[in-house]
Image (cartoon, rainbow, N blue to C red; front, side, top):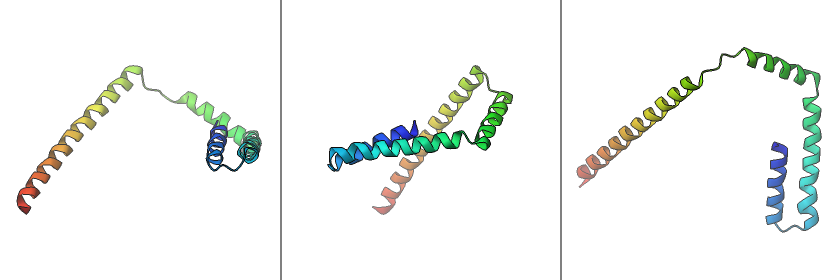
Length: 104
């Protein structure tokens, strides 16, 4: 997916440069094919495959939070961020007023 999106972005950049249809299409296609082959080769190496199998086994051992815990934690984070924003905004306005009066 990353290789495809990167090739698409390269195509758009080359298209904006007006280099000709051949270059605009074949260069991203060649990059896509080359990087796809590289990714397939890397993923099928035994060391990488063993790592992915081990990572999958470890992910099964993880103790995931419940939906309720995630919702409560998210609400707490949003409230703390809002309170901090208000406090920092109030402090900023206070300092601005203080220094405006001080410099007059």
